[in-house]
Length: 358
Image (tube, rainbow, N blue to C red; front, side, top):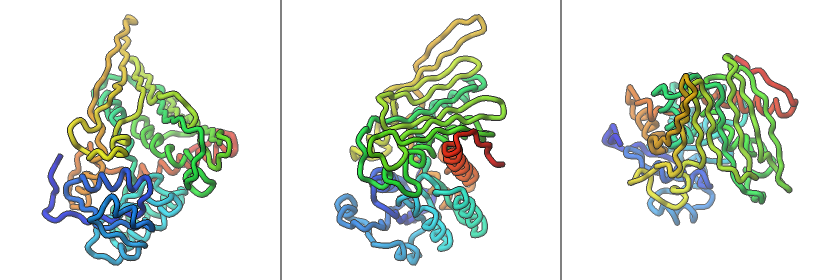
């Protein structure tokens, strides 16, 4: 871990202390050298103080926007509030991290991109699954040329939660449902591996009894070289398949999820011994010109959500060259993710392939 680049830590305001704020953002911010969790905006101060007795808790974002001691705002609110809060933070001169999805609409994403350029501000999205151990392993295999040209990239993220829970993500409303919840992660990964698609077909559904928002999706992205990415997530599957990658020299198959979320839920401090080590490494299959098949268990790098916040810290501190392994999500990709999310909604609604706009 690289030490903080300046003597004074960057004060961070966390807006929202629900699942994302409590489980991911607060622990990661507090574990990142050079960042200091200064303020939490929450309507439930007792919940915040129970976990974080040393932070300031305020009821609304006005206190953050007026506080010149704060340099970074992290937005972990319900999705419909992401764009308006991010806009106000940029206008106030704050750096911004927005939990996924970036926004609810593509128009909102483009407006924030324009505002950021006009203000010279920094804004990024918390696509933390790009720092999962299994995805880092896949990227390493690609960099090391241990996979040939990829013809099919499958990214799955399924859970077995057949009972609908009473929470905003599972009720009807803007930005609710699994396509907005898990879709941005899988789309971001597909863009990193395959590039920008030319078109996609999406099937998005609500399959659980009593469900108020979509809880199942299956999306096929088509690329200019005729390769495909298949993205699937649901709340009713006992399968733990994570990746299937096919290439000209073989493939890579992975089961099981990255361990960092469970560790954070259990209260483990990020970055300690054994942090992010994948308990179920994937299998690389190589097939040579004579058809001989070799299988290898690949234990790649550990997952590293802290790298995301270290990169944010570096950008906020003015580091000129942030290492690739912790470079924050660029706005161009964040906007493209929202273009795919919106195209997926249109495809599912009209039951047709949708060509992605340039």
